[in-house]
Length: 225
Image 1 (cartoon, helix red, strand yellow):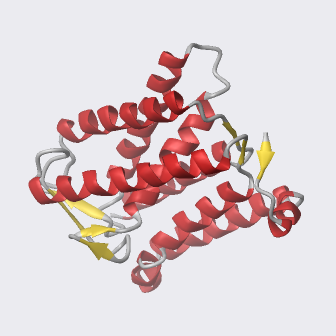
Image 2 (cartoon, one colour):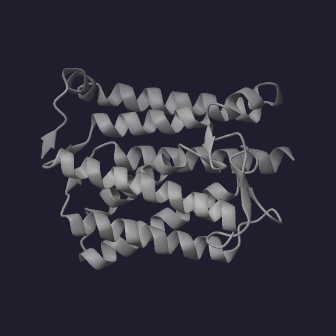
């Protein structure tokens, strides 16, 4: 596998343990910041930067034989993911009736621009995680897609409190999770069909770190109500 040939990235790869520690500290500070009423509003605006930080870590440790092809695929996923969200929030037909808050930053057509990057993050991380599973490609695609649905299930519990988005009635309908599964299947099938093979030592770590972050906030919110 070819690594991204940037001298800075090469130097940073040698500091993998430190980067992991820094990310853990960053998210611990985030948990504390969101949990304290005096700082929660400020930290709400930092949510997009947390995702960007994780994506930067993934870029540093990304290894593939075809960087141009993988870049093209993920640009297409960004565009498709963003357009699906625009259609979803506009019509209510795809995921149900919901609206985005301020937590994910700048919006276009009432949809945060960073939401497409979130789709890339999830497709990439879950694809890397299941790549080592001793199963055929069909089961890998299904497993990765179910991981994405699980991630969304966790995130839905805390998203309104983080001012990311909120569904009508306060809860995401079953329709949301069915759509997530179908869209995830399409994205993972596209990546697998493209023949792109990637490796990334950081993918599983940042995926679990993000999940732990949201679970921690959910637990704190429950106990402090």
